[in-house]
Length: 168
Image (tube, rainbow, N blue to C red; front, side, top):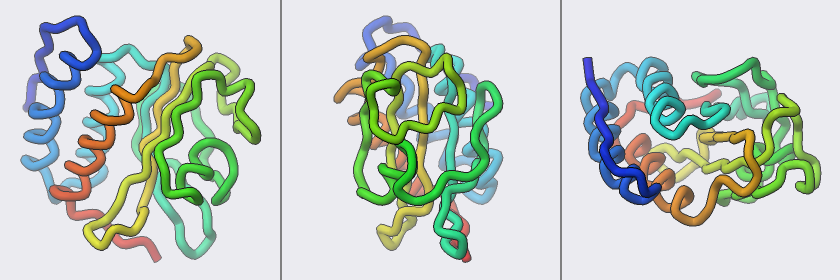
């Protein structure tokens, strides 16, 4: 059992304290892919009090994202490539920071409570996108370049340490 402890109140400080602990969690259970993703979601949701934290995984055969481990209310189970913020992040191979989801073109509203969002691609060791990390908050403009930087580091730790299953 891994306990995560944070003492700072500044966002960057929280990430600085949290990332080494998350890297340890990821490295300790590198063969337990689903369980590790679930624990990563739980840690992030708990420590940042975000509305929804989860992963979508690429189904290459169907050219869509499939819901994977998450924490929060019920979510969309399938997202086509290029649709919504998650599908756009996948199609464009970039981090998407959306300060107001209601103003974002083609936003898919799994919950009307979600107001801001950040989505980051997750890669396998060959540099191919295998999924996305999706985080939502009930307040506008929650996410910024600080979140993008540190969450990118987290996604890189997943790539480096997990035995990511290949999608068909």
